Image 1 (cartoon, rainbow, N blue to C red):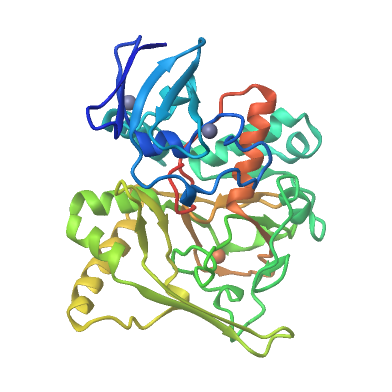
Image 2 (cartoon, rainbow, N blue to C red; image 1 turned 45 degrees about the horizontal axis):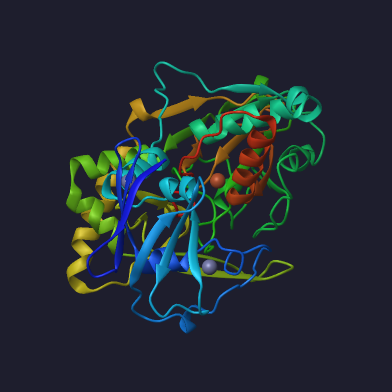
Length: 403
Ligand SMILES: [Fe+2]
Ligand SMILES: [Zn+2]
Ligand SMILES: [Zn+2]
């Protein structure tokens, strides 16, 4: 695979020409720190094999060569331990090339999201029996669709108390959040929680007051009379990553402002059996090293007054208003009505959800819900896919990272 390798004049870099014509430049320090020799290579999770502070600060390569197929060696001046030779798999090296083109390729693969067009597609559905009782491949396909679109529906989920938890726990244990492991959404005339009224809500992502907001939300339509009697109460979903990219296209300045000027979310309920006090200050949008969008937080219902420098107030509200208007564009939203037994499953870190107001007309709109962690879901998805030999999507999911 390696055609030729040579250390630079000052020995601080190693240049490699590959059989496929690719050219890589690695820093000697990078090669040494990632050595895969018998002494340096980690054999156990968490194992610390070398104390990097013991290695000289300025690492100078004095020779590099291929001794046996697939293994690449570098000799370094004054290396520790004495006589140590840095050794790497050439396939691993090729895979980890960090030239501009390779970095760009990784960014394109990991940050690419597809957004289904609501005018062309309806929400994808799965059957509870297939997911809960079928082969593991069915679970993989369900999660694959969740990774791809950010939301789907599981139909005919038995309308028994807590089945939503059973469905969620096919993926991983549910989270204990502000309102417990299982929460309920119905109009009980609440004067403290707005979602427990019959009013329409604003688009929101649940629980941004946490450092790590819940990743996947399950909402199970329970009552048999829900469909026949209740008017209104439709569900709406909008992809916040699509909205934010539209914002970036329409105004880089407004995008930048939402990435830099923070707002505050707060949820306080000291009257609960276990009193709650959550407060966080963070930006609505988050970008990474490559300026890729990696996280979004949005919930006007729990948002507090911003506390920012004087000059940032007007730009913040200009950007905020612009973003708000984008996410209310009708051509971006999926609108549907949950049928009894439907469970809406969505990535709460990628899409915002809401409902229209409703009238009871003698019936009830009663949902049970649960959350799971986003990274746990992704871990289940990828490991299932790899075990089953299926093609896995390595795209971003909204967990503040592109990889
Ligand atoms: Fe919600
Ligand atoms: Zn080593
Ligand atoms: Zn490269």
